[in-house]
Amino acid sequence: LLQFCKLKSLSRHSFCLVLPLLGSMFSFLNVCKPQIEEASSVRVKVEDIVDALRSEHEETQPEIERKNEDELKRKEAQMAEAEAQTRALKLEEEVRLQAIQAAQAAEEVRLQEEKVTREVKVALKVAREAKARMEQERRERAQLVLAFLKQHGFTGVSSAKHSLMSTTYPLHKAAELGNAKLVAMLLKEGALPEQKNSSGKTAAEVAEKKNKDGSHLEVISILKVLPSRSSMGGA
Image 1 (cartoon, rainbow, N blue to C red):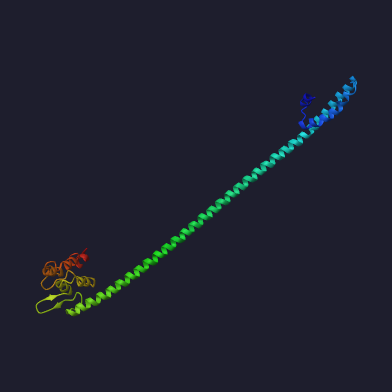
Image 2: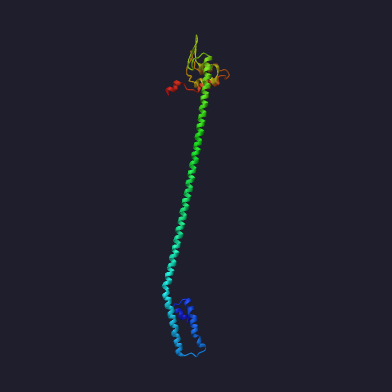
């Protein structure tokens, strides 16, 4: 019977349903004498039952295939949905990272702008302070030069003073005195280092003549490194 069911392609479930029925059908054989006609009838009935079960199995096979196909489609849909969710999450993460990077770049730009603003403010402050110092130095220098000119009878930084037998200039006088600070001030106020006195000497030559044991070296060094106005103009 098992071999017959296998040949008829019956499922395990269908066989389990048939087995009790077959047992009840053949139980009378234990108490009754078997008859040829009855055995033949039983075989016919068993074959009929098996054929009916096989037909039922064949009828349900398309339904099983349809269910399997539906299940496959459902799984494919789930996989597609999962992939779509994964792509959406990945895109969302990329957008979030781009937003973070943009915010970081904007913060860097802001910090750089603040740094530049601070540096500009510091530079402007330094420039103002330097300008103020230069202006203060100019005023002090002008006052000292004016006092020197007045003290020695000069009317300007490049104006000559004439006496009975000689002509000299403020720069020559400062060089003769060995006053390096005043020499530098006169030069900044526009005194001409190439001017010559009545003896035909420049201020540097006067300082060299007066130099004793290095007393006028600083004055000489200041005057020697300066190019003359005429040479600068001809360059």
